[in-house]
Image (cartoon, rainbow, N blue to C red; front, side, top):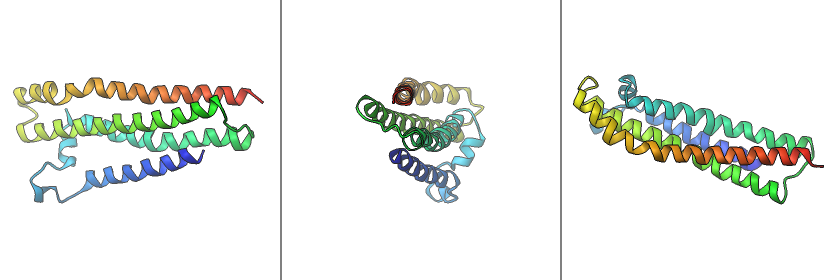
Length: 169
């Protein structure tokens, strides 16, 4: 259980850093596109928004709530994870945290790159839109899908561990 609490704390710290990136008012000094403008324009910037919201919901809140499940089984029910269930818990921990962080950060990165490109070249410019979607976003679709699959596998393995541990004496 403490490992999931610490993971939620670390994920929360990273969420704060992403939030600082979003609200940073000094982008104009460096000549880059402010995230707020890129998000407001929509289109490719929606990937950034979606990744950010998912990271907060799953990477921070989801990981913290997961710790409550482990707390309930180990401390309330007194059923300590060992052997196979401990392996499943570790797989849950690693695959879920890495998969969620990597997939949502990839969404945010791709969305920022694509959204920045469209903010500079015009969200109504058909050529720019085509370029952004084909060359900047589409290469990320499969890797993000695999990373989501990794996170999902971690959750499924953790759920299997919950079931095994809660049903045994």
